Amino acid sequence: MARKLSDSFDVTVLMGDAIPARIEFPDNIQTVLLPSLGIDPDTNVFDIRRSQELRELIKARRNVLVREFERLKPRVVAIEDFPFRQHALRGEVLPLVERARNRVYGDALVVAMTDGILADDSERDDAHRDQTAKLLEKYFDMVIVQSDPVFARIEEFFQPQNVMRVPVYHTGFVSSESGAQPADPAIAPDTVLVSGGDGEHGGPLYRAAVEAHKILGSTLLLPMKIVAGQRLPEDEWQSLNEMAADSPDLSVERTLPDIGAALAAARWSVSQCEYSTAVHAMQTRTPSLFVPSGNSDRHAQIVRAQRLVYWGAGRLLLPHHLNGASLANEIQELMRFQPRRMHFDLNGAANAANLISQAAHQKD
Image (cartoon, rainbow, N blue to C red; front, side):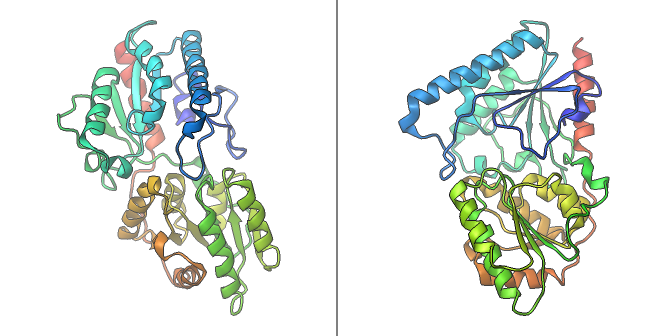
């Protein structure tokens, strides 16, 4: 998205965590890192015992956001997931949005962006949804939904009591440009590529994958590569390496330079069906097994995987059925599976960038 926006704007990306090694920003895109909040990887929430430290961190992050707004005087402020998710970050994000809406430096365009599958939000109470709708009505000019409307529409999951007047646009999936690039030559033929996004909740999948590889190894010589992710806790990372040490044809990596190119090269993919991996499956048509996380805040992965299975993009193993034996069986079934060709719009970045550019010029 940042690359496409940089065709029309000077782009600065403000990030709440370290930039993953596999992501390379072009020289014409500035990046600013916010102080890390240190969310508990087990619960995905803040440790209440660190409440004073948390308040100080939020204040520091808010100050960085305001400082950058004052420095850049932007024509466009685009915010990922707020106010749909990330309500805990309201204290740091809202001052930025208020400055943009109050025309401190002219009439800035304020955009909310989301992937559309708000499965976690759909289970919240009406007050939460209505609060989100009020924030959208008060501060935002448009909502960009990064999904093909045939696949998922935001109104399936987000239904406030009052009809919103803020315009909503489904612009298609935001896909990596790597989908059109050559496959990664470092991936051996007939490889099963196992991945879990940033790895924060990937431990159960990775442990089952090691067990499945040992089961399959009795009858098959099957190369397998596990990409653990930067947020897999260090103790789990060390344990995973120990488990995999005596398994031939099994390798474990923290990250890869280009996961899209790796997926294009792999013979089969096993993933948690996070947004980027789902889109890569559509791009590459790699036979895919989706094993969503069982963590309660990752329910969107299950919804996304179920829809991809409906459209013939892959197979599904639900988290409560996950173990080494079940995964080994599903990998064998995957070897006989042929994915259908997808016809979803994968030009979401360009579509959204054009829409934002047109709307910003109309405000001039």
